[in-house]
Image (tube, rainbow, N blue to C red; front, side):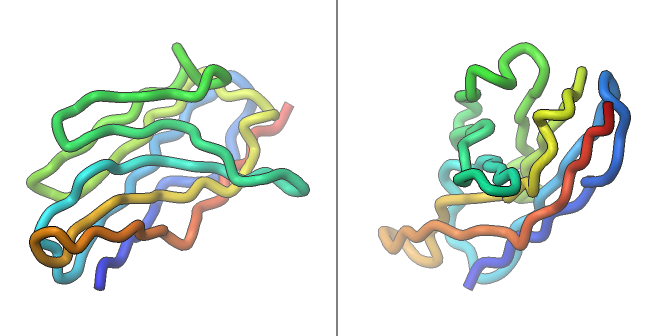
Length: 120
C-alpha cells in the first residue's frame, strides 16, 4: 500500500503565501505522476497542478503564474508553493500520485487533504 501525508495548510491573508508538502511512503516500486487537487465547499474536486517523474508540469489556468509544483524523487515528496493567494483559493487541498507497488501494477492514491483558508 501507498500512504500520502500532506502538511503545510493553514490560514493566510489574501496576497500571502503557503507551501504544501506531501510525502509518499509504503511499499513503492515507482512513483509516476504526482499532483495537487482541491475541493471548495459545494464544488467538485478540481486539478490544481501535476508533475511527471521527469519534471514536466501542468497547471490549472486559475493558478498559473502564482503556484509552482515541484518534487524531490529521492524523498518521494511533492510540493506546492502558493503565492499571491486569493480568497477563491480557499479549499481542501489533496495530494495525489500514480504509483506502482510492483512493476506494471499501477494505481492512483490520495492523501487525506489539508485545509487552506485565505481571508480577504
